[in-house]
Image 1: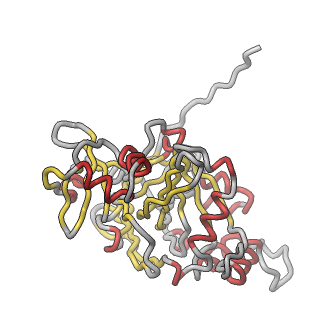
Image 2 (image 1 turned 45 degrees about the vertical axis):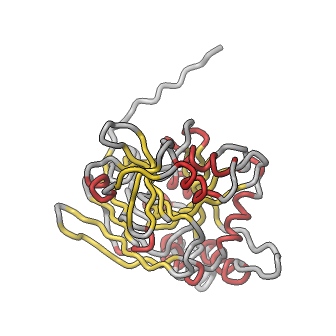
Length: 331
């Protein structure tokens, strides 16, 4: 079962559900957040909440995407209560690119491990604990709140001060915190985590800065557990031609951490268990065009697709103009 959010022919928000190859409007609900809250209040989860409301007209979701009418598959009525975060160095093969990016210029003795490689090895050794044990904590970063999310098909803005505008094809977990402060997983979606790799390469301590960028996820929310093996394609189109493309892998078969371990180390903080909040948590990648020497330009189009997640996620790059920041005292 997949969920989408969109604007209908009247410009009104709506929710669509795909079951058995057909997509239909869910009656009596205008957002996935509202639907999820109804599911929390009832029995049987999202599927039962949909059945209780009934289905309406058939929806052409590919046409909605082409027309720019799809929204991110979940948002929050107050965008400040959506938290967008992520983890890195979680996938087999993810360390090679990062290690090369962060190696010092001859200052460390030959053979000494970078911090990236050390953290990656920690994940290999104890990222998949058994018997209810807690595994090693991963690298973690904050991206922003709901205000930094670009809808599928719409431009991802890159700030004027950015040194790079690079895609990161990932899987995002989607969560709603219930009234008791318990994280409730709704499912997973494709995501373009979008980072500034040139800034990150200057110094590993700039990682936090490099992640404070816009992003996109969706277009569809795949309800249920994450498949163990995910094999999609990430590409960049320029002037109608494919500039670069490469497969990306995800799912626990291709990861050095379990999803449960990554979830635990995010939600162990009480800050992230506030009732009513939405969390979009991105699980990392091992595939970057930046690693192949690609430097994106304005109007390049990122495309991430994987058949198990429905429609592809496409977003062009938009370079923002410099915005004056005036800081004054209030004494």
